[in-house]
Length: 230
Image 1: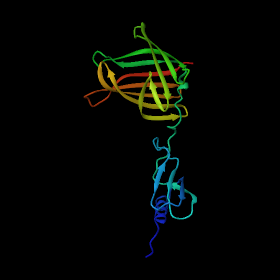
Image 2 (image 1 turned 45 degrees about the horizontal axis):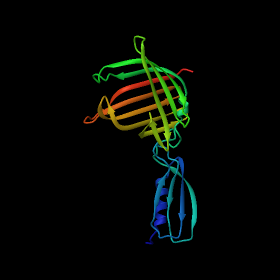
Image 3 (image 1 turned 120 degrees about the horizontal axis):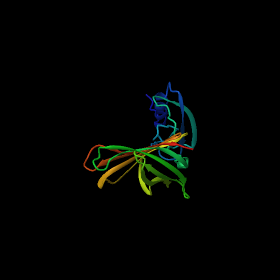
Image 4 (image 1 turned 30 degrees about the vertical axis):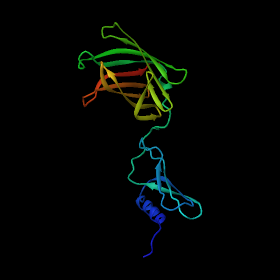
């Protein structure tokens, strides 16, 4: 029985597993002058279940050759809308917003209260947005004011001027969703703090969750729900 080359075996395996597929990918093979056996399989950004293409590099002892073949995909989830590589459109938060803030009381980490809020978003000179917030207590009295800033610098998200680790990131046609996390303090206790910020068309939310050190679960510290007012 004749012995097949590693290149033939590689192509045969890829073609066999791609039968009956419906979505094309591009297989790019570069045969150089190096020793056979250096196989490098890479893919462009699969983090958001968006499979754009796959590249296989194979080096052999023949003259350089470039070949492309369109292959379908099998057993792959359909791509979802969104692009994790696109900049976050924080400028979409510019304008007036109204809504509510529901929070867990710091006195016992149990009782919940809801305030009416309004916000005005302004673009920052070096990118990002600043939200000026006004709170109204349930009895109609002033609950004070606050400020929140969001900015992306060198691929990192700054929330209120502090860099956060990105756990999830999705940029959509009508908004975005990011999940940020860092170690810090909440209610004067060391904790892991997580923010999930979502812009969905005319709706904006910011959910803050906290897990105290030495505990196993997160609880919701507060939730902002805002609707565009202008």
